Length: 370
Figure 1 (cartoon, one colour):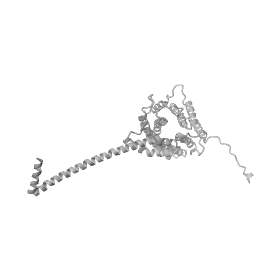
Figure 2 (cartoon, one colour; figure 1 turned 90 degrees about the vertical axis):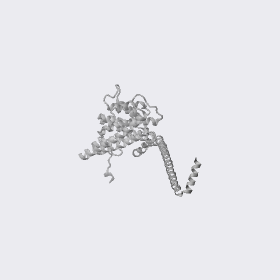
Figure 3 (cartoon, one colour; figure 1 turned 45 degrees about the vertical axis):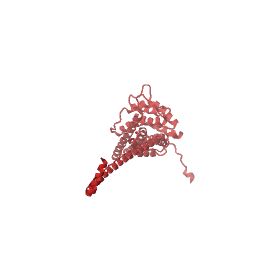
Figure 4 (cartoon, one colour; figure 1 turned 90 degrees about the horizontal axis):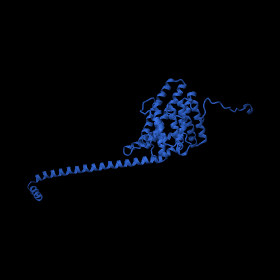
């Protein structure tokens, strides 16, 4: 049958060349269409293959970046006392590192550190605006004071949103805190990030209150954080877990258990932090005293912090945490100074106050020199 068809074509072509030309065009068009389909299929396969390869590359890169950041970048930063550099790093790299969650597992644990640090950046701005407002009020400049307070609230709103993101990522990674079940920690850094997440939750609520805005932070965060802090050994972590819990007791009416004294606990944790060279407990103590309206107590904590800095160097492994604590203590001292004098704590005089008794100043006998 096929042979017959081939002979017929040949015979037909010999008898009618024009008919062969028409048939040839049909064949050539069919072949061309086939080639087009083949090329399209080949390109489609190639492009889909490129997409798969790209996704594999992105996933691999994301996994490497997450692992490197957790194992090396975070520990390196914690050993550094440069808060400004840590602040710039977290704000600049958070979008990049978090975007890898689109192609691989969400970097929840890393996000806790990124958003805690970035929230601290915004809170620092809020404190600066607060000092500007206090200075303007001291100078009786109402408009400047009001403008600074508006900027302060905006900064605290941003801080609250960042802290709250850190808290949400913490809960995703470690599970719902405060339920009575503690996570299984892999290493010290794992425990520290858990503590950092608890700080994020408490700071999210505090910053929301300061902003006078509604960010959506659950109002029971303080109680949850206080319960969850029991998953960490206070002695191991410079007294910070117990200090965090005691601060919640001092700030929330009815939260303090019977037979406990929040400020006695804070005094104990202060000593642990001083001995370890990580004075985070001083921050909690000063916040609790401020909330109570105890200015003398706040001054006492600031003095103790300043004295401890002279007596005990920062823990090399956790230098960043100790520097962060000092930065907050300085800001608390600055607030008191600006309220009462119009200017910040004089350079090199942390731990002193405007109303301290003046020390006797040695005078020089100019007549003797002449």
